[in-house]
Amino acid sequence: MNSLKAFPVLTAIFFSSLLQGQERNFNDLMAESELIYNEYLDDYEIYNGIESIYLKQFGEKVKAGFDRYLRSNGYKDMVSEFNWEFKVVKMNEGQKNILVLPGCKVLVSLDMFSVANNEAKMVWLITHGLAHTLLEGNDKNTMNFFRLKGKNFVGYTQSKELKADEWGAELMAISGYDPEIGVEIWKNLKDDENIEYRDYHPFYEDKLMHMMRNANDAKKMAKSEFGVYSFQ
Image (cartoon, rainbow, N blue to C red; front, side):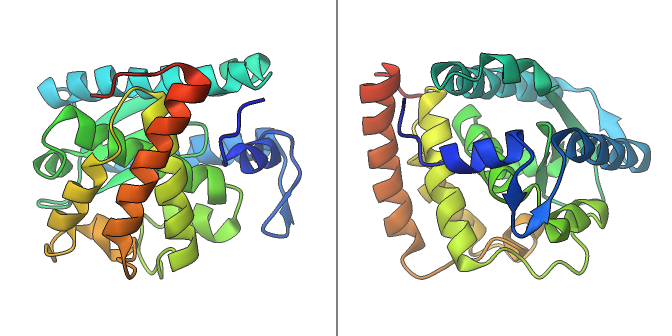
């Protein structure tokens, strides 16, 4: 069995066990996520320009990496349980955000493409968001965050952000991308007060150093356990 560190959390979500002290049925979680996702689509205009095409192309590569992870750990039957969707939406003017809901529903504001202006950057944001969802998608507060569209959300703790940085890097490397791009993203994010995404992702001490170490470890893991030797 591969040693991806997210594995215990993945199984906790998949098989309706206890996470954050709350027992949630997997099907109930997916149904709730679907309702919230559709609320977003009702509230925001879907954008079908070139950015939407790019997002789907990038997202399919992440999906392939995630599916590969599931299959390699004996969970091929779970692949069909995730109905991936990738949508670019027009949020409030200037709003820069990306959300990955349980069930792998990915929503990206059009203005976020000014931050993630190439393929690797967008993939880093998707895998980081997916890591948070695997960690906390079963938590009531996180679902409230999605429901409230981020309003009145105090943000992730430093420990959760650390873990999401680590696991997101691993998921990115398995998908064939170099997680080091995250360092460049955060160098830009930490100085831009107009990016909503930054408000609930803490810039903890030595974050960039940890991200670089995570990237190196993730690429070693992807090479040794998944046979991935090239990273975009």
